[in-house]
Amino acid sequence: MNNITIAIDGYSSTGKSTVAKQIAKHLGYVYVDSGAMYRAVTLYAIKNGLISEDDFNKEALVYQLDQIELSFQFNDQLGFAEMYLNGLNVEKEIRTLKVSSFVSKIAEVSKVRQKLVGIQKKIGQDKGVVMDGRDIGTVVFPDAELKIFMTASAEKRAERRYQELKERGDAITYEAVLQNVTERDYIDTHREDSPLVKAEDAIEIDNSDLTLNEQYTKILELVKMTLEGCE
Ligand code: DC
Image 1 (tube, protein in one colour):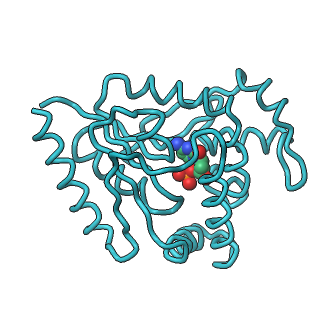
Image 2 (cartoon, helix red, strand yellow):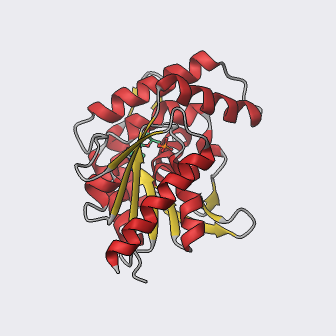
């Protein structure tokens, strides 16, 4: 059977990565969390004093882009690849609310996008990949055989994210998470370079009222239909 490319885009905290991982595992495909790459660049910017509440030194970040080495390394125990920044596993550090609060600003920078899109295209050049993000079906893999666009209400998404962070032991409030979700929605959909839009040929799934299992079953059905159509 021919390998295909599966692009999963959508708003933050719609559960894209959960279902993308499940599908990749089922098919034996590579899973790539493109958001993790934007988060890793954000972590680099925070650690190097390039971004804070009241300042963002874009020029310095662009100048230092060559010094930012990103890679994914498969973790056998977890069953998916983890994000490494300059040789260090940053999988946990990139998921904090602090990184979330700056990441959309970093993702607006065209030079950052160019670098990351280049890496993403390379990873997916032989197909057999499930990648999730904001511009996968529109910019990274416009020819992907299957494109999914996931949505859910901001409140539902904030609730899910809040539970996740709380379980990790983060001291945060639901209101702060909801504010972050709506701010990121705004920046992600209004930025000049590759804003979050549904690709014309993407299939939209609103999972506000779907369980994880229902969502997985629905997407798996679409995958099967696409694979059959590619035979
Ligand atoms: O999927 P995520 O929430 O981890 O993504 C973090 C941020 O990265 C998101 O707010 C927007 C940005 N992003 C992007 O601009 N393009 C992508 N392909 C993936 C993420």
